[in-house]
Amino acid sequence: MAERPAFNIDHGKVITKIYSFEWFPGFSLSQKQKSIESLHNAILSADAHSRPLEISTKSPASIGTKLSAFRLTLNSHTLENIFQSAKVFENGGPYLDLLEVSPKEAKRDQRLQNSGSLTVFRYQGQDFPLVPKTVFYDFIYIAAVRESLNAEEIQAISTYNTFTDIEFNPAKSINTQARTAALIHLILAEYGCLRDFSKDEFIQYHKEHVV
Image 1 (cartoon, one colour):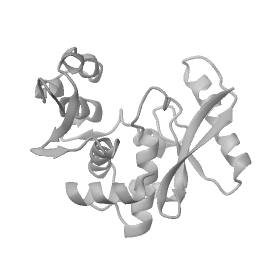
Image 2 (cartoon, rainbow, N blue to C red):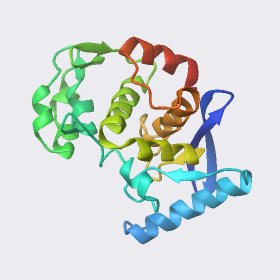
Image 3 (cartoon, helix red, strand yellow):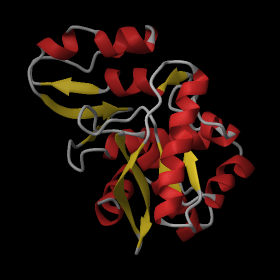
Image 4 (cartoon, rainbow, N blue to C red):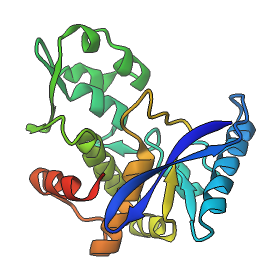
């Protein structure tokens, strides 16, 4: 058995629920999708009204794969490269050259480990705070969705109400595309479209709606 979170909306807030399910080991697509099906069955057993969507390259739904952070781009760069290149530390950064390497190289660059404590994220001349913890990742993810998907594809997110990411382990990571997808669902429900927030507007919205 394994445990994974799922994200949905309750009383206008993005919330997290943990589900236990049978895990199918292995790296093949078929094994990953068996685990996804098992997780979604656990969600449906708890709430028959759930409409779960896996957000990853392993998703059986095309909109789920299109929403993968590995498929989305922003200003011709991957989200991973933007996220890593925006980090500002006590003793260095932002390292903008990380925009020009592979996502794996950007994430593993030793300067990210050897420059002291992280202080802010700096993107397009604006500084984003470390708290709320996921606010910068969510901001650039939503910007990438607006740039990468058409209006019909974005609206398709509204047909689901629970979002998963089979690879996300909250014991090892903070950010997940599944949480951001739930936030997109909330924004669509509130505004009828994926609103283009300013930095300050988004930080305030995030504080009010993400638990």
